[in-house]
Image (cartoon, rainbow, N blue to C red; front, side, top):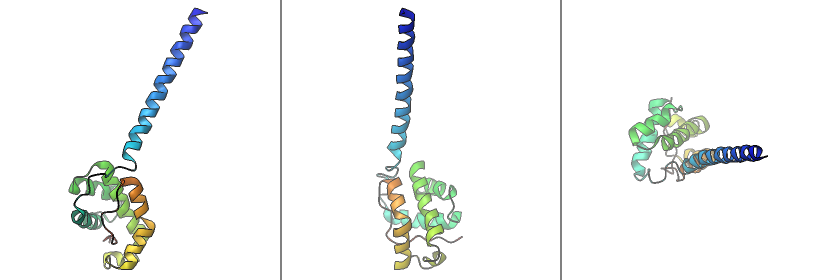
Length: 139
């Protein structure tokens, strides 16, 4: 009976350790998801410029667009991924409204990005998109 109790105690300890490890992993993910860009997008004009530049340079495709933002904006990899996803979304969802990058300042382009891309970016980044206008994307 004593050895069975010791075995149960060991099983309980291992189960707690396993649950603790799983909880730590979830918390680690939660720490970046939804907060990936907090405090990293202070210079909105630079963010705007680099979103357009990285969009053109990478053809608006992930993961290259995210890596471009990480490398040239100096944001974390997780923030770069949020920005890259924003670039890719604009290309896939708003290319027509943004005239393939030729009318990115138009209200149609801005409205399209707002409707299709900005919410997902904010949910990832924990910040508003670095610009109110549409993105400059051309393949």
